[in-house]
Length: 565
View: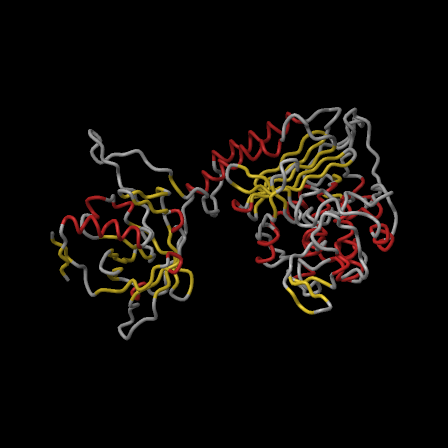
């Protein structure tokens, strides 16, 4: 095959090929030629911006150094009066990367032992994780029709005044997945309802607590519902972030009593704690747990009482350890050997829902997360503070990373030690992932794919097999070899299943490729899928599609073409 090119046509088709195929999958950049520069140029911003979590071979010096800095940071946080005990744990995927335990369990007892990862702490509002898990589990099991079901679907005659809403709840019969069913029939209109998901994400508009009650209220769920009838929503549901202990407690009790038909604490113990092996997590202290308890203190060092939160127990009553919460973190990251939720449910639960106003203490909210950005990543946190104790449970899902910090005492108001710890850990994890060797999968028989291919006789590709059986794809064509370094012309194809491969860049590449006035995002093409066609009578695939790039009919050609100007 011989292809003839004029110099003008060559340049035109080179640029056209880059634009039409999105540079397809190549990770090269065209150098800007300036007087005295020759072909050297400063690099563009390099990608991937977010490295893929890969198995790591420890020890990793840079990571060890970062964790030593975290150790120093938390050790310096200890104050013998206001914060005498702290336990922390760092989780990476299915591994405990580091534990740090500082101070004594009881600062007023000279014979008290040191803390460890099994020391019991009150976890305050981290307890809100469990009504949320219950919601998702009942939804998975089909006992709840939709995460967006309105509360009145499960609580007959539930009413609350909503003066800021666009419609009155009394007009509604019930709401399912955004469809509101009225007596007159089914119509698609905007819902202003208190839904289950909004209750689990501080978007329900419900007040912080029930009127005429405090957090020690010992009433019943029906009494709470009755009290709400003459109460008022502080925001139109789904329009504003507003912190509500009432929302989580009401959600928990309604799901337990009206859906599951059992006591809330019993359901959580049997379906979550026992299932995940969280043996030292409970709503009440057993004698064995009492001996391992870190004694909470006020800022003046005075021991804090362990209040019973009564009806509000789902919002803040629980006790746990760093070791148990590490198991929960692994489960939420999809890495724990004991499964609780399906991957799709976890993905939904870890997705932020709503951007909050500037006066709220988090940028976004989720179920049940407070979400902020950290170095380009979504940092999901649940913080808790209750007399004598402070706690943080946090995840960076994109890195499969988690950090739990439990404190007996008051958290520092001068610095956020969780964010500071992540500022040490995240760059070290990124570097470790970037430097880790990618383990690629070879196809069962690479011979089906080896050969030459073209896209509209504009761009040309050769697929070869490497020493490890993994497919290597290289772009070639007029002046390609002269203009583009080989390392930017070559990619590897990771076999997934049934003639489908994933594009893999083994090295960093420019995020944006610039050719003349054209620019193409290579970042968007990293990880794209190639779907090869069914094998012909000769046992060869006639071509492939790259649907994510909107590129189809990349066809096999019999031999390598030759080019002449």
